[in-house]
Image 1 (tube, rainbow, N blue to C red):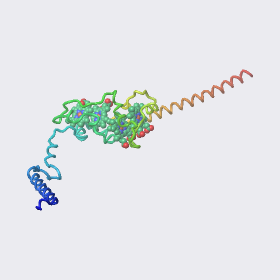
Image 2 (cartoon, rainbow, N blue to C red; image 1 turned 90 degrees about the vertical axis):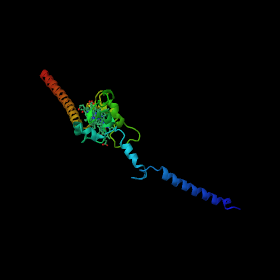
Image 3 (spheres, rainbow, N blue to C red; image 1 turned 60 degrees about the vertical axis):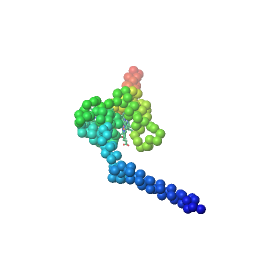
Image 4 (cartoon, rainbow, N blue to C red; image 1 turned 45 degrees about the vertical axis):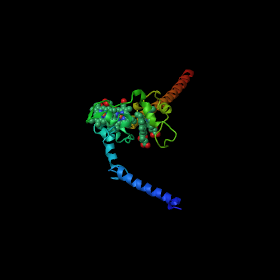
Length: 202
Ligand code: HEC
Ligand code: HEC
Ligand code: HEC
Ligand code: HEC
C-alpha cells in the first residue's frame, strides 16, 4: 500500500498546496496600499475623495447665507440639513460663486414638505412635535388651505408663534369683553324697562 493511498495524507497535501497557492496569490495580487490604515486599500480613500463633491453640508451654505443662519441656529430646526429642502451645493455653487438657482419648494407644496416630518406616522417617536393638519388649522380658526409658513417661518418655526399666541389671546379677551358688555347692556335694559313700567303705573 503506497503512502498516497492514505486519504488523510491526500487531504493534508491538498490543504498545504492550497495554502502555498494562496500565499503566492496574495504576494502577486495584493494592492500595494493594502493595510496602510486598516484592513482595506488605502488608495480607496483617495479615490473617494477625488470624486466631484455634491453635498457640502450646512457649513458650506452658511458661509454665504448668514441671515438664514442667524434665524436657524437658535431654532428647533437647527439640526436640519439645508440641502434636504433645497439643492445640493454642487447644483447651486461653482468656484465659490452662485451659478444656478437653488430649488425652493413651490408655495402649493410647502405644507406637504412640513407634513413629511410633522404628520403622525406609525413608529415616529412620541415626543416629536406632530400635528393633525385639519385639527391644527381648525383650532386656529383659519382656512384649511392656509400655508404653514403664514404662521411658522420655515427656518425658525417658533419665531412668530408667541406673537400669534398673544394675538389670539387678545382676540379671545376682546370676545369675552364684548360678551360681558352685552350681558350688562341687557341687564341695564331690563332695569330701564321696569323703571319705565313703574313710571307708567304712577
Ligand atoms: C424644512 C425645509 C428647509 C430647510 C431645512 C431649510 N430651508 Fe431654506 N427655505 C425653505 C422654504 C420652504 C423656503 C421658502 C420660504 C418662503 O417662501 O417664505 C426657503 C427659503 C430659503 C432662502 C430664500 C430667502 C429666504 O431667506 O427666505 C434661502 C437663502 C434659504 N432658504 C437658505 C437656507 C439655508 C442656508 C438653510 C440651512 C441653514 C435652509 N435654507 C434650510 C425650506 C427650508
Ligand atoms: C458662494 C456663495 C453661496 C453659497 C456657498 C451658497 N449660496 Fe445660496 N445663494 C447665493 C446667492 C448669491 C444667492 C442669490 C441672492 C440671495 O438670495 O441672497 C443665493 C440664493 C439661494 C436661495 C434662494 C433661491 C435662489 O437660488 O435665488 C436658496 C434657497 C439658497 N441660496 C440655498 C443655498 C443652500 C442650501 C446652500 C448650501 C448647500 C447655499 N445656498 C450655498 C450664494 C451662495
Ligand atoms: C426633515 C424633517 C422636517 C421638516 C421637513 C420640517 N421639520 Fe419642523 N421639525 C423637525 C425637527 C427635527 C424638529 C425638532 C424636534 C424636536 O426638537 O424634538 C422640528 C420642530 C418643529 C416645530 C416645533 C418647534 C418647537 O420648538 O416646539 C415646528 C412648529 C415645526 N418644526 C414646524 C415646521 C414647519 C412649518 C415645516 C415646513 C415649513 C417643517 N417644520 C418642516 C423636522 C422637520
Ligand atoms: C394660523 C397660524 C398657524 C398655521 C397656519 C399653522 N400653525 Fe402650527 N402652530 C401655531 C400655533 C399658535 C402653535 C402653538 C400652539 C400652542 O403652543 O398652543 C403651533 C404649533 C405647531 C407645532 C408644535 C406642536 C407641538 O406639539 O409642539 C407644530 C409641529 C406645527 N404647529 C406645525 C404646523 C404645520 C406643519 C402647519 C401647516 C400644515 C402649521 N403648523 C400651520 C400656528 C399655526
